[in-house]
Length: 433
Image (cartoon, rainbow, N blue to C red; front, side, top):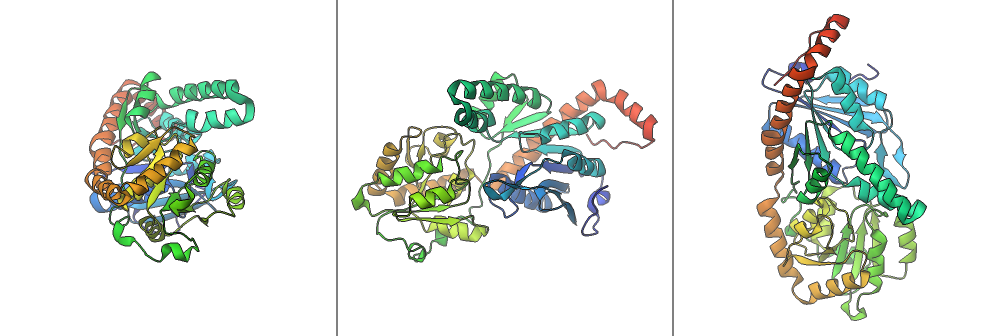
């Protein structure tokens, strides 16, 4: 093995027969804790350690190759370069190193969280260890959100549509290989169904309602940023890049009524941050950068008045839920998962890329009861979106379905390979049904 654990701990070897070794596999990751996948990994670790007997192996990109074992949590970092324009994120390209870790620990379940190259690392691992159950999270409609957008910028509309078609073909071939696939919304599940991917479930994500709460409000927050005005403080938290349509927020802000007295804070980093900060230098907009401290992010949200997002391809929207949990109404666009997150009475949604309509909605929310909308949003999140509910569903429903499918598949075509492997190296194979 190319790595050795940083700490000596029982790890997988200490598991009893009732426990599983579960592997989370992600290609893109921010070690500082920002982003939906990072939040998911952190909350899942806490759930596994506090509510289950299982062992959790999490494979993520990092600054160097390193494995840290802490009891039943194994954290494997694969050395990867920072993402250009988003230095807080790294992206794994060394699939052989990932395969080394999988071969070393031989997980019972591999959950793939990204759509790019690593799903095939998991699929190829399963070819050698057919008893492994594979689960995939279709967390972003990447052919539309990523491939189409980039294709349009490079080669225009016809080229973008062609590339999107190819990407959906890739998704169809890839996700059919998994024993179960979960989406974050019914719309995304319908997209997969049209591609004849039918072993699917919906897994609503969650939010820490104790961390993100109205009580974290700091009356001095706005002044600490040097922002003037006594109107609404708008806030956006996320990547400041093209995918998130962050430039539309600045354009929207320019169209707000001058007597509204608004200001805006954009929390995050990304390819557009430097350009937008320069273009908005004459506006009361603060670009505070990537926030590593979740407590400080909670303070920023609770100290603002309206959450704004122009993202059209959101498949779930953890940042929206965190804002709502903090007591904020939402002004966004009627696309993707946003209509599910922002039902009537919790904010206003408008057409995609219509920044004039978004500005009008901000003014309407502020003048027609932003505080009441925010209180309703908080109540909705507390009732529906706890992390325990998310992971109860994952462990009690989705994983058992995947394990059963793996068992059937293993009986159908795995025994022959297993006999070949045993003859080859004489090593017995563990299988947990």
